[in-house]
Image 1 (cartoon, rainbow, N blue to C red):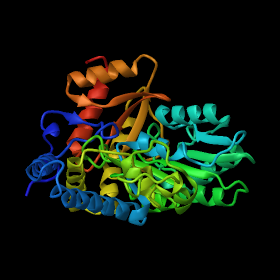
Image 2: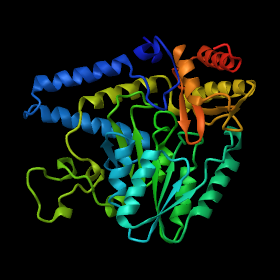
Image 3: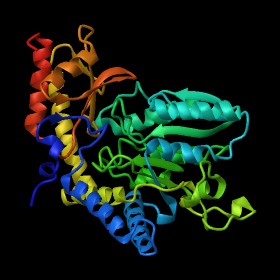
Image 4: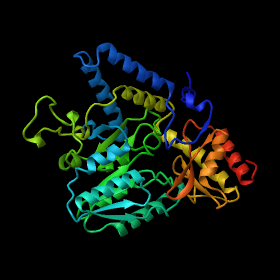
Length: 399
C-alpha cells in the first residue's frame, strides 16, 4: 500500500512547505471525486434516482466532520471555505448599534475586512487586542495562555458583543487557548459571541475541544486536510442556531424548498443547515472524505501532531544556527507553522523567488513581514535539511 506522500503527485517534483496555503490532493481523493461525478451523471443529475445518492454523500460527510469537531451533526454546516463559514453567521448575529467587535491583531485580512464592513453597516465599533507579540514556544504553554487571556481582558469592553480569534495563528504559529477564552467570555455581562478561524488547525491539530467551545468555528478542507478546494465546514453553538438569522439565503436554508412559507422565520431549518445556501459541488465531498480517511490511516490526530512538531522543531532548532535569521517564536513550535525573519539585507519576496528557482516552496507574509514554512506528516527530514542548506546559501551569497 502506498503512503500518503506517495499518493500525492504534487510532491514528486518539488519540495513543498506551503500546506498552510493549500495542501496537495492525493490521487485517491481525485479518483473519488471523478467516480462521484460519473455516478451522478449515470443516475441523471436531476432525477428521482440521484437524490438518495446525494443525500447520503451529504449526511456521511457531515457526520465525519461533526465527529472531528466534537459537535452533534445538527450543529455542523457544510460551506465552501473559511471565509463563507465566518461571514454567513456573523451577519445574522443579534448585534445592536453601538456594540463592539474585538479582534486579535493576528487575524487574516479577509476576516478583518468582513468584520469592518459589518461594523460599518450596523454602526458598531472595532477594537483590537494584541497576541502577535506573545511568542512563547511549546514548553511555555501556561505562560502563553496566561498572557493571551490578560491581553484579552485588557481589550474587552462592556459593550463587546463579538470576539474574533484564530485557533492557530496563520502568521506566528501560536495555538490559542480557545476553551479558556470561551470561559472568560461566558462570564462577561454581555456574553460576547466567539468566532474562531480554524483555517490552519483543521487537519493538523486535534480540534474537538476548540470547536465545541466556540460559537462559530469555521474551517476548510483544502489546507492541512489535503482535500479539494471549494469545500469546508462550520461548527456552531446551540445559541447561534437559536439566536442568529441566516443571511445569504437559498433553498438549502429552507425546510421545504418547494413551498414558500409566509412566515419567513418558520421557513428555515432549525439547525446548522440554515447557514447553508444552495447548489454546491457534491463530488468534492467524496474527495474530502477520502483525504481524511488517508490521514487517519497515518495515525490519530494526536499521533500526527507529534510527528509534525518533531519536524517543525528540527527546522526551528536549525534556524538558530543561521546567522542573520530569527524565528518569530522564542521556543519550539506548537504546530507545523514556522515563521522567521532574515536581516534587512534580504527581501522576503526575493528569498521566496530564489528558493522557488530550486523547487523549494515557502511563502512570505506581510503581517508581520516574515517568511513561513509549513511542515506536515508528508514532509521528510531530508527536506528540512535541504531548506536550511538553501537558506544558508542565500545568506552566504552562493545563491
